[in-house]
Amino acid sequence: MTELVSHGRTTSFLAEVVSNDDDYNVPSYCYPGAETNAWVPGIAVRVTSASGAEWLGRFMQGEESPNGVDLCCIHPDGQRLVVVARGSGYVVAPENPSRWEEVPIRPILGHCFDDSSNTLVLFDYTRAIGVNRNGATWKTRSLSWDGLVDVGIKDGALAGKGWDAALSKWVDFVVRLDDGSSSGGASPPD
Image (cartoon, rainbow, N blue to C red; front, top):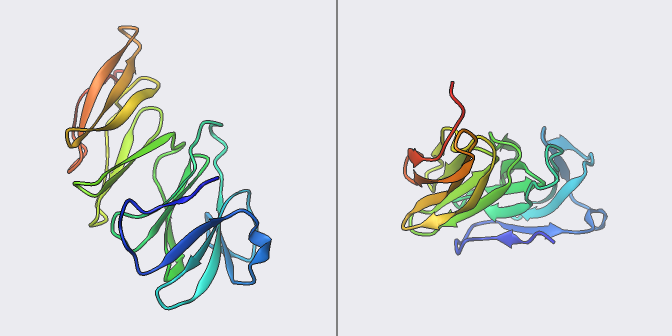
């Protein structure tokens, strides 16, 4: 079961992952698209905005990989909600559910959070994307031919291993959390 992850931040809204979304008689929105009163397979989240308005969000799950992750967390800016349903990611404003965007990588296969820089990192097979408290987003270059492993925050940076097909081995990479610049890793030639 997916739970809301707050990363220790307080917000002006409430969000709760629900298992039976038929029990709520509130306006509903399906993502992608913010279509009203529809249904999609994925994750359902009940949201109460700062003004007290309630709504239900249904977030469509990805189909690209059965290894896509589920996540529901507070955005680093503390004002929005991030939902990942089996690898498809969405960012939505609780005060205005029609204001939303898709996370620009798929499938999302993992995530980590750095408390000191207040940065959320999501990653797919070869790249990572980071979002900070100001809403600034960075995306890395390809860090691997195919696959990232042992990904996590270490010494204030994103670190892990990417597959180098030319060498037939895993190689280390490090990504700066402030701008997404990286060293190491491997990627196919252009």
